[in-house]
Length: 503
Image 1: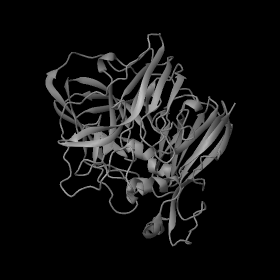
Image 2: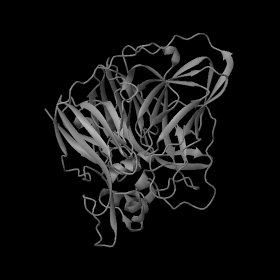
Image 3: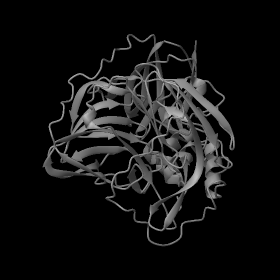
């Protein structure tokens, strides 16, 4: 549907399906998150800036057995003081946003408990090569008050910057923006990056809070565009500060854990080198001036601080498509300030010229085509449903809205496939595939075909409006796997499907 027609139809906008239940739930208050009230009049809360960057807490390993990581994890309500004098109701894992750190080759056992009153949830191990029945997909919910064991092995070669978040049908977006997210860091047995560079996790989230400290519920604009908060936080802080010596190099892992914010980033007064993406290290370091990190993507950087003074991680403008009024100002935000001293540090080891080898997956046995569209109508074909005087909004893949009881595609274990993701919608959609990592072959838009700057393992790729992205992948574990837009509100409005991988 063309943007003019789409926007002209908004006066009759309604939501159907699971998203309708969520919308009713949001407007009527939320059991389990305290008594929610409408925001009161007053000044928007001011978040403190410039505090020392805090590390996210590590989840401690309760196992004494070698090569076994075992821990307990609970999703539960809590409070965070983002602004002075205001306690904001949130959802957290063990009262925080923890980091699970394990090593490739380890076995992982997580005893999980859902303490969210009145809501099911799951843990989706985003990007990780785990069995389908351990992947926390929407068909496998953990009821409120329920428990389950997530258990899986981390194969050799799986070292990467993963993360985890809930994936319950119809509630994913809300549970994530209220705070449920954590980091899963899988370390290699032999890391080529010098340990002198450190290893700093930067989890990027965004926050919207009302004058009374509560989180406002999703609006119509949020459901159309995805929720974009008023404040971008790094490890839960606004523009925190780091101190480094002149000439220091830092390994930074950036995670876009927002629902829908596109982050076009640059480091002022410092040099950025990409060394890894979603699925781990790339083959060789690549120097960049800026990068785009879309929802759910990760990047590993080596940042060289060769000039004294303040080095700032800032945002640039990015046009990803916006429906209706209220387009946020994406440019000019300072996310992190690094204060570089005048005193030079001792010489550090150089970054290796080669980091790893990434083999081609080979010739695909089959090609699949996934077309992303928007629909303002009552039918999956995009036609208008005027019987009630209203229209229904959906985000679709191949003309269909997600049905939890439907298998959209069938594949085979070990089969190499070429996927063409075609975006015929009016905005960008970051496309995520569960259960595996893929390689991007090319982008095509307006007749121009371009290859990526480097070969990498990815689980999420941005597909710009009017663009076709071709990826090659192979699923090595049997079972149903999801593929969907990682603007979480779009996922809930239908832009998701299921592929069954058969042995």
